[in-house]
Image (cartoon, rainbow, N blue to C red):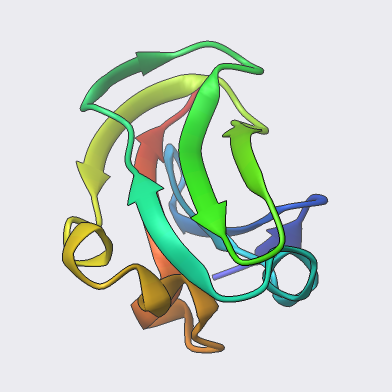
Length: 101
């Protein structure tokens, strides 16, 4: 499984047409401790649409998706425990799975 990173997100290839996105360590440092997260809905996202809205100790940001695709799964546990976004473990800080072309 290959990993790729953008400014805010790491990207893991789950299979040829599916990826998982999560928050990079650099983004975690920039934001500080995450206090609130608004996750995407299952459905289509265009490049640049908001993937996740984050309220943290250093910033409040709408983070744009680095890829277009269909959100197929969302990590709902981070809604109840937003500090999971600050985890260094990918299995804890992932945000969504997308089906991409």
